[in-house]
Length: 177
Image 1 (cartoon, rainbow, N blue to C red):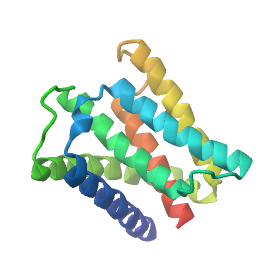
Image 2: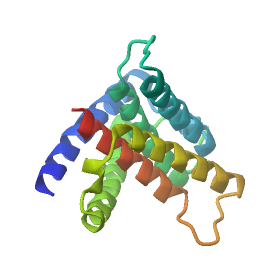
Image 3: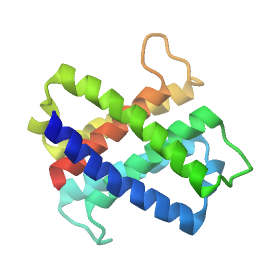
């Protein structure tokens, strides 16, 4: 588990660095996005990865690692939007955005530790393409929950699905490194 935590933290540091640099470049314009729109952004990233995995073609040139990083960051944005709500007041200070990112990353990392312990690091024996498929499945589940106005009878809610997608993307980043 110690190796996993070290690798997870290294991959998360890359994701965080990109999020913070984009925050300096663009501000927090993502605050205007509804969670459904963020779900669709995650879908676009995962679908591109799957297409590259299936065809072996990559005409855009960006590697799939950058798409997994995008999934991680969109999952954190989605969790924040669920918690804070959509706002026409899009600007958060850089420091506030950094603090909020770190809070959600820490929460998601804690979930990973609990599940990873229970599952005995089974993800290490999985194909990266299976992690992509799990993300796509979680997106479909998330869309269904969104279509049900966020209500579930027995299943985990939206936030748990975003955390799972983020952790699958983190595992893929670790496997690809």
